[in-house]
Structures are given as C-alpha cells and as structure tokens.
Image 1 (cartoon, helix red, strand yellow):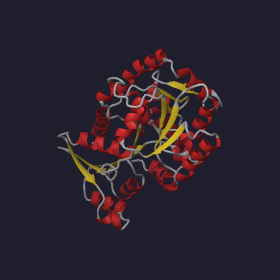
Image 2: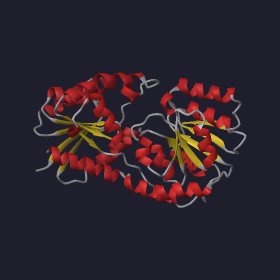
Image 3: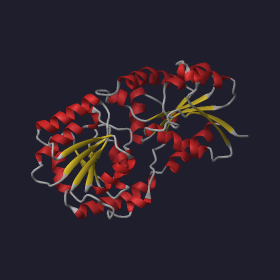
Image 4: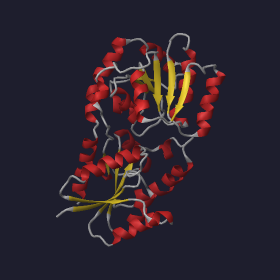
Length: 350
C-alpha cells in the first residue's frame, strides 16, 4: 500500500526559485521516483487568487485518511491542516531568524513566523525538519521542544563537476574577491566594505558584491562605498544570471560570506564547488557546514576580517589546502542525500 504525501509545491514550481523553492523541487522530484509513495503537488490555483489557498488545502486533505502533509516553505498552511484535519503534518524550519536575528528582516515573513510557528509547536501531531544541527539546537532550545519531534535533513547542492576542473576558463584575470549574498542587515556587507577599506592599499583586488535584496540596505552599502572612496574598487552587481554569477566566482581568488546568522549557507558550497576558497564567520552554522574547508573570522573583532583577507590573498598554499578539504565537504551535501532522509522520515510516520 502506497503512502499518500501532499506537498506544498508553490515555490517549487516558481520559474525564479528561491532557496526554499530549489529545496522543495529537489525533494519532490526524488520522492516521485519511489513506488511506495503517491506524491500530490499542491500548486497555486483559483483559491490562491481569493486568498483562501491555505483553507483550500486543509479542506482537500480533510477527506483523505492516513495521509501526510509536507510543507517545505510555509507555516500558515500547516497550521490550518493540523487544526482542521487529523493528518500527519511535517514542516521544514530553514532558520530561526525571526526569533534570534529579526533586525532588518522582511516584515511579512517575520510576522508569519512569529505568529504561526509557536502555534505549530503546540500541535503535538506536527513534526519538524531542520536544515542543520545548528538550527535544530536553536529551535529546540527556543521552544523547549522534545528532540524526538525534530529531524535534521541538511540542504543539498547542485554540484556541477565541469565547474570544478580548473580556473582555465577565466576571462578577466584582474584579482577579485566576491561576496554572493542577499542584501540584508544580518548578511553584514557593511562590515565587509569597511574592513576592505582598511587594507585597500595592501592588496590589489577588487570586491564584487553579488545579489539584491532590501533596497534601503543596498543604499546604505552604496553610500558607504562612496564615503570611503571605493567606487573604483567595490562594485554592487545586483541580481545577475546564474552563468554570470558562476563566472565571477570562478574568476575570484576567493569569496567572502560575512553573514552573522544563517540556517545553512548554500553560497559556501557554491564557491568551493568552483575551486574558489572561502572566508566566513566563526561561531555560526558555517563552521558546521564547512568544517576545515574555510578560513574563519570573528565578527566581534573589528579588524579580524581585514586580517584574514590579507592572510589569504596570494597565499596559494593555504588556498589549496582549503580546496582539498572542500572535496570531502561537497560529497556530504547532495539533494539525493537530503531527499533520501526526507523519504526515510516519511516511512517512519506511515
């Protein structure tokens, strides 16, 4: 007898997927290969236009017996499903930003998470996936939650071996440092620009800040660039194509991921998969993900990032050590491994 699994696939079917959408799509595609599962995708429909999609899903599941509802992106829908049906519900926790690092966070998701996640925790039939041990620890500690209700299903990565062969495809040979990250206060680009300014005369590199996000924060970073007279050394690219982003990562001597708080940190894997070493933040999930495959700085020490940049710049021996270590890290994080863990958890629930 097959297990029926309903999955919120709205972001999975988005043409411009966020990280949650990539996560959902990879899991759905894998689960559909399993003959003992019947996977039903729940996408946008007429009810979405009326603002009643969450209620529609709950009513759709109400008539099914012994199904599982899995939501990789939302907290509102699982609340209604759990409230109005007897189905088993599984929700993915990608991070605890709304509770532990809310400053500068987008208001709408902040309110949704703060209202609905505590309600879901109180519903005993709801089970949770966390994308890292770091996130699980924070989640369980914050809500004083039984560990048995939480499983760790780490994120995966679309590893492209052709990007890992060499740096021979480099078009622009000028020395570069890149930072691939959404622009939000916790992503810490302000500190990166300031620390770069401290050593701008000691290294020849230009710094590329790749990504978009909170417009007000982008403006703050841009204003700091002008204030520090770095217009010819630091460049904000905005959103760019995947190919353009990958090319800049490949051309960089190393990348920097200065975020103060993450649930996982996919840009770390994006970088090392393309033979580009990484500097990132101590005492965060990044140390769980990268282990000995990155150089770390202490964000509480004002000049530590500047010191690490100088230390890694031109240090080919250390760069190669980090890249050698990264091969073991990359092998751990595949979407197949992630989806397989999700599948095994569903089997336990059935």
